[in-house]
Image (cartoon, rainbow, N blue to C red; front, side, top):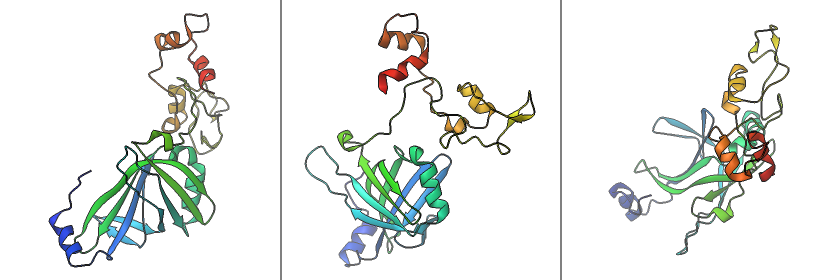
Length: 227
């Protein structure tokens, strides 16, 4: 991030018009990008919903540490609340950017770029904590099992497979009832965007961690190491 301000922003500051600025929060979940601000505004063709409140931060110090930022989304729609609840595990760990938009200059300055480390949500409000990349000790990373296979229960909220909505079993012309949990099976069920497996886990990697045991070829055995 540049430590200098553009000539346009410097002119706005020099004129004492800094109060005419708003904060912008942006993050992406799957194929959808969500944008929030204190007011409903459009910037570079993107509409920002007026739900954002900056509770704390960002704070900077001379140490190699960037304090977490707390943002609040108030009066959110039921659709947004449902997305944050249903996609909770997917929202955590996603990159988020907090900017300040100087309205007179039409330019932004990036205040904070990190990842969403915590989230709490009800039907009216959501609180997100953003942790910086330079301070991994402040982040609470969602727990994941290290496996080449899917770790979700078939048809649970994290999997999301829905009878009558997602692809059916061509062998029976009925909704799928089970899933082998590999990527190909996720793709056949239209759930590849939810697949949480680690495709780079190989037999050689498994043996390097567990040793050459009879069960070392089973990638799922790695999950027990990280529970």
